[in-house]
Image (cartoon, rainbow, N blue to C red):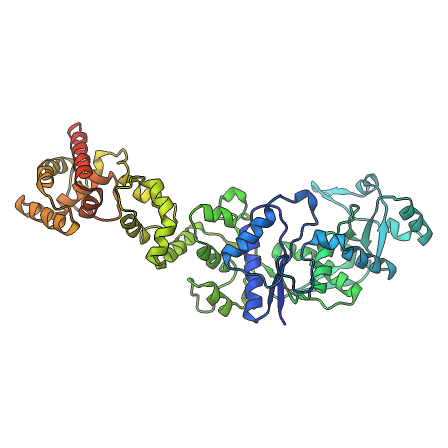
Length: 483
């Protein structure tokens, strides 16, 4: 049975890289009809953020990544929160087992002594523990423990030979044991280190596949030493490429879209975020880009994850999000869009259903609604040069003449229906020896103050209504007369 885990630390918003880890872990499990587990790794108490666990749960729910086991669904291998596992004495038990068999030892060195072992090479600080406490006798160790001397437990790394770690995507990584430090397993506060807790939990919880970021590759050989010390089978490791920003720096908060919540706040749909995130380092064999979560699960092959870093292209995500918006059912889009529509156009006299219909096929994020529709509330300031349009053969001078002549025609008509208005303005153009565009362009510009609008001149006339439309055209005439 394939079993994967997502094991985030509750330190704040969920980074896109963490979301990808969760997504790939989920897809590996579900593709094989296996188990996807959630484990909360809160052993680093200094970085713990209140409410972060809620963010993790909310993000997974909104992304559609339902865990089969976790803090809220015991599968028989809990607790699923590492601080609870600390209280149960799980890590201490296994650390002491390693001490008893000579694979680990108690270290009582003070901070001052450890600092004295640090060296600086080319401005970078390095530390290498000298196994000083490994040589303490059992009596000395017992005496210090009884006296309550602060201590840690370290892995006794062999000083000769090498350790080889295998990753599905990056192959074999071999490191000389002499280059590996005796890493700490249990810290002085009694909490396990990240690496030690991972190995213990993954084994005890039956994890078969581990998905991690490439940045953890360098520490991976240490995992093998732990598995070998316990005589346990090493799970399959799947390391993923880094996610970079447009400048090819590691994606960070500075980009403004590094977390799932950031992207939701920017008007992206959860389904589009998940779809795009899946393609940051992997793609299906036929290069299809728009895929539901179910389709991603069906097509996912973790052996095809790229080695090269992935670039987070916000423009590509915007395009993909726009495609998802277009495919939404109109009623569902209306419900989601209504708050954005009313923020842009608070007037209840304008039918929000009509505005939603105009917007759905023309936006890439929900936030685009504001800039697309705000002119229905108020015409923005604009330059009269906007009336100049080469294709429409329009100029500010011609526009002024057209608007002055068309204003009384609109004031006299009672039928402000789109079709009737279109026929009316077509007839007006023909009677005055003008092309349709030489009438429609000035009217649309007068109504919106924008070069591009959702809908043509007569659609805007119908939506705004006779009174507002006439008011705006009069204001446009006054503006043009000042030039």
